[in-house]
Amino acid sequence: MEVVIVVDAAPEVVLKLITDNDELTKWFPVNAILGLKVGDHVEF
Image (cartoon, rainbow, N blue to C red; front, top):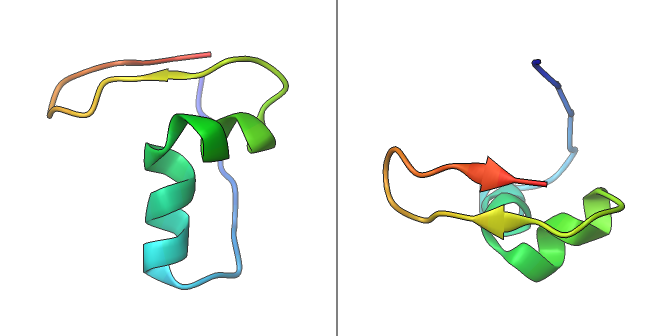
């Protein structure tokens, strides 16, 4: 499944939103578990 979200914000703001568990869960109604290394997975 592919989801596209357009965010009108500076790249550093968007990076924080998608790499910080607390920020990411503000966008999705469930918990997020992020792997921060290349090849890791994201779970919602």
